[in-house]
Length: 403
Picture 1 (tube, rainbow, N blue to C red):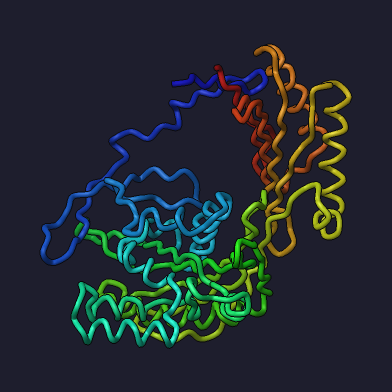
Picture 2: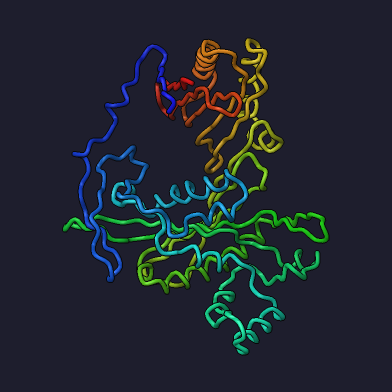
């Protein structure tokens, strides 16, 4: 395993002072299904920050583990779908009061059925006939599972270009997150859940060996997404554990498959415990912006210029520099975090250290402190060092990796 050398200019950072000890962990009892015994679990009293949820140990993976990776084609969308949902959940489930756990009630089989395309009329007749004839293993349960599909009817074996255009796949994933509280008798119980629904901005399909792209406007996506959300809520309420807890639902708009920046959540709503209908939706004003880009120049010109000037200063002293890639996360059009990736070709550790020192000086000189800033210095797709400067901090933290 690679050793990490932590260098904070002239200050040595002692990481062990931040490591939680076993004495900071409390044992609780996590209620399982009635057919199972109660399970002893650990809740750490150490919280990384007021904005992070504590988790239940042993950590239980999601009941639908693996579905996200199979359904979303862009790695950055996969990450943002999860982290963004947890971020929005904080408005409904306070991290200081509740614990986080991956979704335990929407299973992989359930989601694959929901994310399928609904059978066409012709397909439905064929499936119903198979059940009636009882000549193969296709059962009534299989038919009902096919009817759970949330995407429009489409027979991909027979579909024409017009069929694809008129019946695009809208929803590509549904993510569940659970929130628990600790009781006085040291048990924990489910008190709420968040559901993130990932929706396409572009539907890609193939006909006769040709690939086509069908753009889905945000207004069309929102209309379909809200219909899907209502159906999902009704189904979730039929799950005993989720029948009477508050639920937050958020709609996520994916980016193109090859986009270097992720999409973003565009709408959210809260539903009180026991309710099975959605009321008003609230607009979520978040976006991820690439720098430099046409969008960056048009919407956030000052940040675009800052990133380009930063790159020009680096280029003055390092001839093997190839450019800075910036990714800005905005909320209500205010920059919350700026991530800069600098790919270079290094020929020695001394060069890495020298470059990192110079870059840190530029960061201190050029960037403001009202947003989080992260600089990732890489070579050959490997992280060489990174700089982190938190909003409001007086100094940054620098990590140099020892190969």
